[in-house]
View: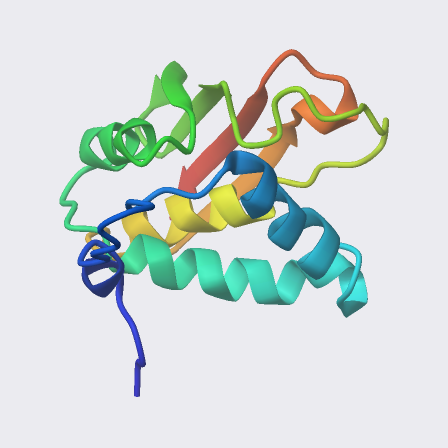
Length: 149
């Protein structure tokens, strides 16, 4: 049984503070609480959470998924390459933009899992999303390779 859905989250009604929290608080929960506090840097948890978030988005094609990414302020997506069964997407201004660099670390598995979950909700086949670049790794943006099988 699902306790909350994405649609439930959109119904937040705080009259004084509104429906937004500072990015610093989100980063703290995500990268300190989960990344540093859970086994395997919280990867299993963030992937499960990301997939569920993605599956709850009202989307029917990849372009709609990418539009939601920007609408939700996850980042600004740009398709770099598009082939029949593979898409390379660059995400500018990602959640991790501006964090200290830690070469060898890619921390945006949550965002990749959101992509995977959203696409799997309408694609009749297997979907994998691999994070290839990350701001934290020292790259200029985050990039994801989406494969459709």
